[in-house]
Image 1 (cartoon, helix red, strand yellow):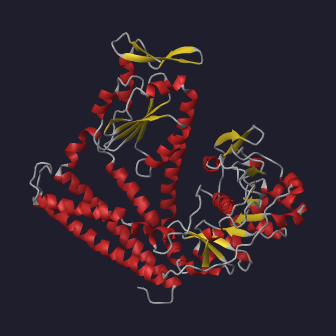
Image 2 (tube, helix red, strand yellow):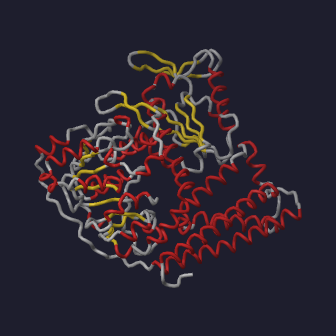
Image 3 (tube, one colour):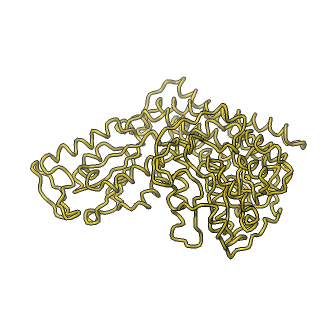
Length: 576
């Protein structure tokens, strides 16, 4: 690496890559390179998150800083180690330089990209970095898109299922003490091969292979979701565990003929409440919520949530110590123009459309059609598998005929069943009802929390009304510490901060997710250059908090009504 002076008075890095000299930016018109970057940041909002690819000589940093306010965060990924070593990691209070490593890139995206900022992210590849480091650039963009899609899916799920999530959570609290925590079975089936059954088009062929060698299945731990249970049982195959995580009533429809099946059912707090109520078999608890909010349940483990029930099934098989984990019906594609196998279809599927949206590679390297959603599921699974690539204990094998799954090579299920000889011995999941949670007390505490913040939001709204009625114009930066309006705003801020950070707010699930997203969208019009002025403007702040508290008050009231109606349906004891 060598520093070269440009024609217009700047400095640029010249590097040697693949036996060829390259300039990291335009050696003749460097000023234009900087202008291109700054123009990309036009309209920067006060809390925009900015990712840059390439720092070169850092000549753009001073102009970049002029675009930012204190709430902006900039992360610069530098792929060249010699260039990276020329700078400190912290370039300013809110600009950080990171050496490009794919694993670290993914980690940073996951830590910084949330439902609050998915519509407020800037990305720019400086100079010639995109061309010179094409492989790194393409992978960075792929991970950026993937992370944003995952965060956006949280908002979608929240908007679609917020009401049913609350109802299921409250109703299912009654089931907790009848369930065994999933972590009680850690490595209980070490080195036992597992078959994870999903509903893709390949399942029909996979089941034929299983039926032909049904006697071999006794050596395999079979885990299925709700959709594929019927297909197995009708072919005389009884799974060792059923996993049901979807909240909607369709899951009940899928299993309504098998409510007396003597197979443990794994669920989490938001699983369908009617299925949990009526299923007579043993139950296994996966906790995404209560382990964070109930004392004495901290040890209850969650599972990997990648968008579909198959991710939970695979993680449970891994948790049990199973290996290899065989993926069946795991197409992630519209194999044979089908979204589901014929054996995994139900009447309600006729109302759904699954149009092809993109092309990906199948197990043979040929193009195959899929949807954006299915492809995001595939990427999530590949990410999960990649976390275990350095752990030889577990292997993943794709026995399906759809999408290529990196980290899970394709093998024929019939050949594995025919030749497989495994050292592990299958052990059934014995019940251990160790949990002792009081659902009535928990629900009472949640309702008290709601009532407390219904009162506080009403108080905050009264203060907003007082400030607005007095129509005072002042800067909060110029007032004395004991100024009455400053004290009013500080009290409102305390209400907002307390409820956003209180663990009990997690009980509001999708309601709170949707609320935070919507309020961020309402408030993201503030530009970076106006941040200091507007956040100190009494009237501006008061109008924002008035809308915030009004919407929050309505949400709290709706959540309370939903809880009360669910209690009336599922509990005989007097809670409310």
